[in-house]
Each structure stands twice: as structure tokens, then as C-alpha cells.
Image (tube, rainbow, N blue to C red; front, top):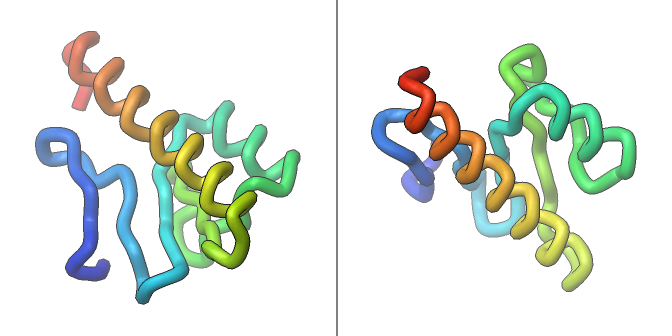
Amino acid sequence: MSQEAYFYGFRNFAHFHGARHIDIRLPKSKQEEALGTGKALEHHYAPQLGWVSSTLETKDHVESTKQLIKQAYDHCVALKNTGKT
């Protein structure tokens, strides 16, 4: 994991690998949607945990990645509110 990682509590929901590659942990339904629409790429090491990858190459990539990060954060908040970690 890189130095640029994002957490909600102890849960890592996104982290960078270099300046343009980010991994994002989504709930399974959102992962399938992101992969199906081409907004994300399959994560190489932990797709079974909801992780997807994104490469920031264009403004459109940046905007769709921001949406994925928001979904990941919102999922962490929901888990915390239901008592799950």
C-alpha cells in the first residue's frame, strides 16, 4: 500500500500506487456495476474483497473515480452505523 491511503476508522477504502493509479474498495454490487460499465478495472490481488482499480488518465476518469471513492466512503459509513467493521 502507498503512503497515500484513505481510511474511515480502521477500514482502508482507497489508496494510491503512484500518481495516477488508485485502488478502491467497494461493496460487491457497486464493484460489479463499476466493472460492467467500464468505470473501473479488476483489481489484481483482491477482487474478492470488493477492490477495483482505476487509472487517472483523463478528466472523465477523474470524475468517475471520484464517484467510486464517494461510494466506497459511504459504504464505510453505513457499515459503521450498522455496527459492522
